[in-house]
Length: 219
Length: 395
Image 1 (cartoon, one colour):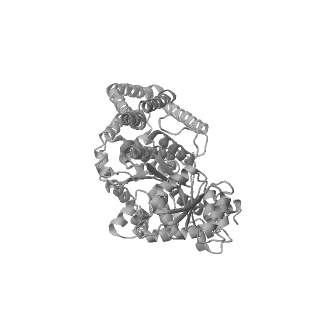
Image 2 (cartoon, rainbow over the protein chains, first blue to last red; image 1 turned 60 degrees about the vertical axis):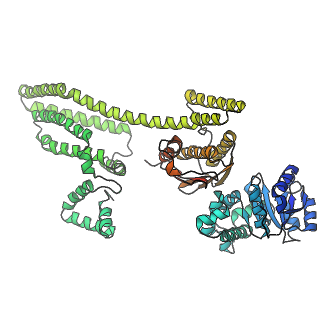
Image 3 (spheres, rainbow over the protein chains, first blue to last red; image 1 turned 120 degrees about the vertical axis):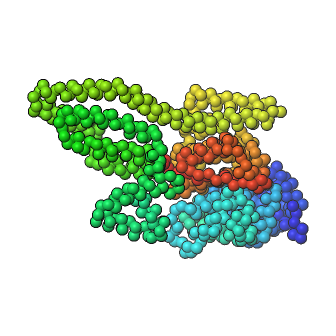
């Protein structure tokens, strides 16, 4: 489903399974321009810094430091490169860690070709992409426990009721469009809610998030 | 907060319920008549959500009326014995007590379920106040001493008269008693039998419903699968073997088919097991998202059994390659959603006798006080929404 009038985004694949790389390329087809690929962290950092793609599809589990090492090697130099994390195994702390390190979305590898393309476009446009899994993790980490005493900005440490509703529907398997229809808001509004949740996720000092980040030596 | 009469009045007139209650209490204190009015209103005004009142239900409750009428001969015997013993005051309070007990029995049998709970939980402990917390043997000793003292009293009463003349009416009473037993005995027996068979029938119906749900989940599901994979002999054999194992485990080891083993203790663990089983047996991807976790209580086990059924339905009928299962643990309830993007169906057009939705999903969840809502339309997938209380129902 290539969108007429939309320039083909230049993407980069970081993934250690050759079979999966080939599968992704086949599924995305002509809709994108794959400008490079890498199967381990150091090579990925070097190539991405050199070629500066718009979107990087980043495997969370990667030899040589994982997806985190790539994010930390690229973002300080090129903050415009957008990362979309994907994985099969979903330990919440791994996923939250790559999001807090700067990835703009997270999807699972079971995603269909169409949805993957949608996600690439979204991340390329600067929006956030939440899979049902990630929405569940976020609801989980924002649902219990006291907010931190050191929180400078209470706005950051809590989800608004609307954001909670949106996340709950995404966790139930609704697409952004279906979420919009259910809540009678536009898809654009859904996107802005999700982006605002992403911001909170990256900046909040909530205990659970902070602990996960500390464990991963992010802070 | 007794029979809910004040609430009903305030709802009908629009006056604040507190004002109505205060008015009732003041009138009761000043005249006492209000108590009678309140009791009558409770009996005659139908409870919210019910079509008939307690009074009219009691009039049509033949079994209850027969029960009360059957007590009359027993009362007559008691009166005869008592008058023979010249214990006048028992005779004086005897008939009013009898009438009160009879009316009480009729009210009990015809009260709504919620009111029964109230009577059992609040009223009965009130009557037995003072005995709470005491060991059972203390009660037994008290009853024994009471009976002994009572017998002593009877002995002295008999001795107060000339022995021979006092014994004669007692003998007469025994004869009357024997006659009554001869005449009414079979009738009493049949009444008791009626009550027992009524209870047994209810137990049997319940058992049958559970059995039907189990058979549907296991045997019928497997047969449907076998029909669909008739061209793959190996798959058919595998299915048949698995089903045979499960049926044996159920018949000879008492382990319900398709339900979780007893070793699963947490909800998330159970959801994971459900996901693996459905994915293995039905070739569909189940995407699970869990928020929170809690102990797997009996209601939650029933919830998972029903959720498995919904997921299997999605695998069998929707045609979609993937189903989503989302569970969120809240402070009182667990919310669970099973969703697919398949062909969908019209929930209103599903016949009531379809076991899958009626028994395996709805009845199972309702048995533990949970709710089910199904949203689907042809071409728009389906979503089943469950809500189940986390703990056991407080009885």
